[in-house]
Length: 397
Length: 191
Image (cartoon, rainbow over the protein chains, first blue to last red):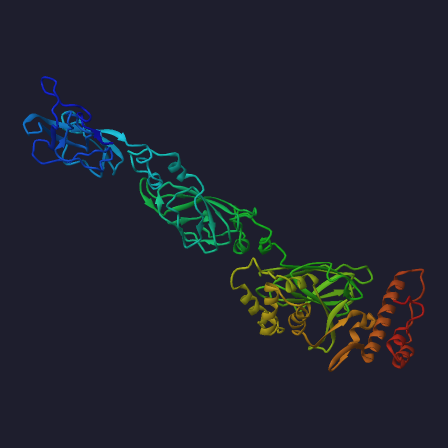
């Protein structure tokens, strides 16, 4: 706001009280003869003549001053000196600039647009006094500054603070997940592109992400540490939490997943086929889909009731069997879907028979993917049809 | 019930293959039989199925192995195509002239080991030459077991004395399997 000169609207009179008709007020920069503009409006848009001339009654019009220190020379209409006022300080106007004015005087105020503070010159014109921010929002820390977390002078607004925790804009899956500059603590990751890293952030930053699709997160021992050092294939709805282990007050991409919740209750670090085949771990849980790889588990088995040599209802129960073939009296050929890795696997058979038809089982022609089962009646070398074939195979697949 | 019948390479005997119903579901729907297996397992499975050493001289062809693993893993087949996969995978390693039959068309099982087919496949019939031998073996076996039982029975009947020539003649002149089967020792229950 511009400052109204003190003689505005006032009548300048002599010692007898007679007005100085058409008196003049000339404005200069303090201590100089450099003319300075004055204005007829508070917006400092309409300049007065210089000197400003009073009316016939010696009354001066509105004279608005921009921020500066002036010298005012008052004269009669005949240019006879009346008085010289120096300095005349115009301190009300709040000028705005990016750094302190070069010319200063007591009580000069300016708004520093760089840091948002208003400064006032002290009475001795020897230093600046920081009057604080021109308003709280201008000087508040940005979201980026909040996330960086190193500025020791700025205040934080609730909105900027929310950059730490609120839901951010969705992140498109990419090799490096790009955290948005607008901040956020919870994100939805869209797409199915594999992820090998997360963009740089300040050490200690925590984020939660929810995966909207199936993608692979690839473990990296430095930049993306996953539980068990194993890659994760996400399922839509999975949620993970990451913390950036970059150094204090420094940025980096050293993310560690410290929590992962699956949306379908699957076990993230369950035993895989190799774990089951090794069969030594005492800590890895086993899910039904891999339990059959353990050496102690049957890799193929069959129970099939037989009626007139054929499976009554093919088959009554089985696992990993593609077919059974009636090959002859008391002989059936069983074909296995997932072949054993060698022909040297263990086949056990205990056929189910009445006394008349015996119950001895034997195999002949065992191969990696087939086995021929025979049923013998007692000590009779001739094969007879059993009531049911029972067979189980153990070995490596 | 439908099944696949084929003539065995080894002895020209007849086998009847009954595919597992649940495997049809894999082949005709979405597959996924080996979803839990590591990458490359299908190739390994093809190798195993086609390896003569692992299959003890009865490997299947590369085509059959590939079709089978693809059908089981990827599904999408029609039922007819699935039957064909079973033909390639389960039957042709052991035999030829594979045909689909209704098991009601099969002969009586009494002479199961005499089942035969023509050189071109077709329906299953009974080889009367083999059947006559089978019938005599069954009679002899039944008498032998009955006599063992009678020998141990102190107060039971005397052992049966089998007049071989009588049976030989009857068996030799039987005109079909029904007539052949009716030739039996009167004092023994018909099996």
